Image 1 (cartoon, rainbow, N blue to C red):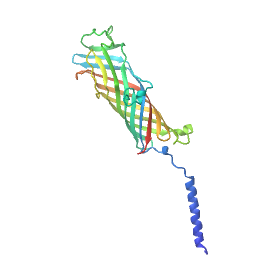
Image 2 (cartoon, rainbow, N blue to C red):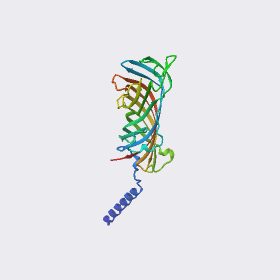
Image 3 (cartoon, rainbow, N blue to C red):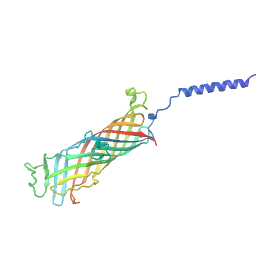
Image 4 (cartoon, one colour):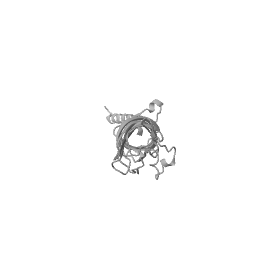
Amino acid sequence: MKHPFLMIVLILSFYSQHSNAQEANTIPEKYTAHNKGKFFFFWGGNRENYSKSDITFKGADYNFALQNVEAHDKPKGWHIDYVNPANMTIPQTNLKLGYFITDHYNISIGVDHMKYVMYQDKAVNYRGYYPNAGSYGETLPNDQVLLTEDFLTFEHTDGLNYINSEFSRVDDISKIFRIGNTDKFQINLTEGVGAGFLYPKTNAKVLGKERHDDFHISGYGLSAKAGLNFTFFKYFFVQTELKGGYINMQDIRTTQSSSDKASQEFFFLERVIAVGGIFRI
């Protein structure tokens, strides 16, 4: 060939133009396309429902069980205390820190600060014995007692602290809602299972005794959840969860005497709404 140099120049020019065209057509990968290696945290509030439970109280001179006791939570409502550092433990709150081990799976640790309050002035069945029966305004016929304040007050209001670890899956469902740019807005479906221990500060007054007022590891819990995560501008999100579980507390401190304790087990249903962030370090 008379002009090999010219041919080489033409070939290199062709590949250069082809490469530039490919680069021009390449769409940068979105930050929200992958989760592996990201950390996340959230803070929010909750409401709860509890199943009825049998509560057993034991001490040096008493041993009795109350059957099918009902309880409720203690909501604060929309309140500045949720973001006031001095009062953030007063409302019912949720705190969680987590890490994505793959694009779809994460592990986390957190605390569900719930509150459990026994309904007063309810008639319940009981069995067992205790001193000075009838002196608390509690006596009813047919092996029942009235839950008067003189007889018993019982609540985990500082609180029913479920310290738990979770293993969860997350799936981007933005396409269902025809969301194109997930770096601006993304919708994820999440579900998971968890386990942990209960660390309540129980406020109880049993038979007029002075109450115990300190945190105490009292039992364990198991839970499962499902929820929706709404991520905005890659790094910020709002997450809603429906979470149910089982709590078993066999060592609840009730009075200043270490020989006095209570035990109970019940199911709970928790509704959570939280705000948080997701990022890489």
